[in-house]
Amino acid sequence: MKIIKIAIVFIGVALAGSAIAQQTPMYSQYMFNMMNINPAYTGIRENPNATLLIRSQWVNFKGAPSTGNFTYDNGVGKKNHSWGGQMYYDKIGIESTTGVQGFYSYMAPFENATLSLGMSFGVMNYNIDYKDTNPYDAGDPGLQNAINRFLPTAGAGALLSGKSWWIGLSAPALFKTKVVSNDQNAVEGAGAEGHYFLSAGYVIPLSETVVLKPSTLLKATSGAPVQADINLNAWFNDMIGVGASYRTGNAVVGMFEFKFKEKFRFGYAYEYNTSYLNNYSGGTHELMLRYDLPGRVETKRELAPKYF
Image 1 (tube, helix red, strand yellow):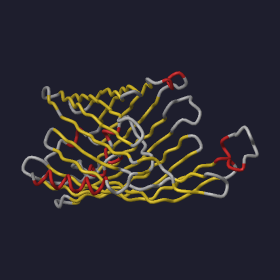
Image 2: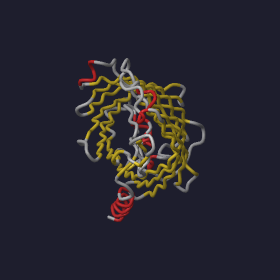
Image 3: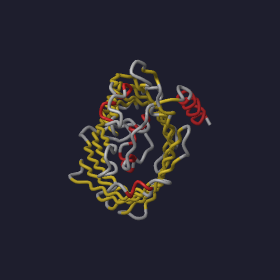
Image 4: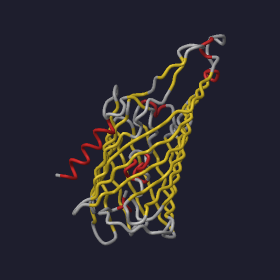
């Protein structure tokens, strides 16, 4: 019961920090870079690693989102402390966001599980140029200016995991970090409601060469229905992975991963939109490249890190 109480206290403090936050970019292959949604995953693997994710959403749709990030994380010896960093960009229409974040996590091993607590801090540049809106009234004074602000970011999360299972809860965006312009002379804080993520999964060995991993991600934000990603991935000889996802009311995803030279992993995902937007776009493409660097970290963690 002690481990549950620690997790509840930490998560309560984190989620109480703010009810309003920046929009959080999402990826189809988020399960290969979970730091993006939960800082408690920092240092989760036994080796330091670097991951690049690039996403082109709604191809052929003017102003469609374009997103990418580069992350690095590493454990610190046998003390179960880990650190990491992230650079990212996110552009949709006339709005763009770029930023950097630092991550820290502490892992507390118990008899049959490990509790990881993580936090992130950073700074983002938020830019929106109203002059690019091509307005009907070219003289509208409210569409002649631009906003460019540097703003702080923070997130928190917890992860409880065993040898073949995990469950995590996070709020990756705790601060109110967007701005809007009401008119030419006034800029005020606004922002989207806070995002909260619940992730869980299980590893099922079918044989010595085949492993299944069902998992799910629940996403909640004020003013919108709860959305779920339901995923099923399979690995063959720890070299080739295939999977599929269903995002409720939004999309279906097919994905492929290939491991080569022991250290490199390449992934590709294609997302087919099931909403009316499919009539105007050519789907979504996403690429992932991960490199596991030399330098194994020995800890007492009870994890199945290669599968998430």
